[in-house]
Amino acid sequence: MPKAGTSSIYAFFKSSTRAVHYNIGKSKKAKVGTCIKDAFEKGKPLLKTCGDYDVWAQIDVTQPGQAPMGLLLSANSQSA
Image (cartoon, rainbow, N blue to C red; front, top):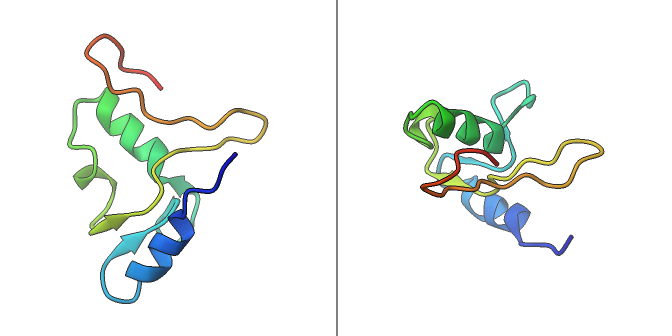
């Protein structure tokens, strides 16, 4: 998969603002993309539900053995 520069974006912003890269919280087990997908499916605010950040550098999810999961936000589909 091609690189998109999300680590560089995170590194740039993390010292001057509230930034998150791929994992949420101190445990690093929750994924930003999963949180956003869950919020979307429940009709909740996508980013406000997933932490108090100013910058979300990477919002997709990759599970072992699966293709990356982005968000499919369309009027006809509410799944990724």
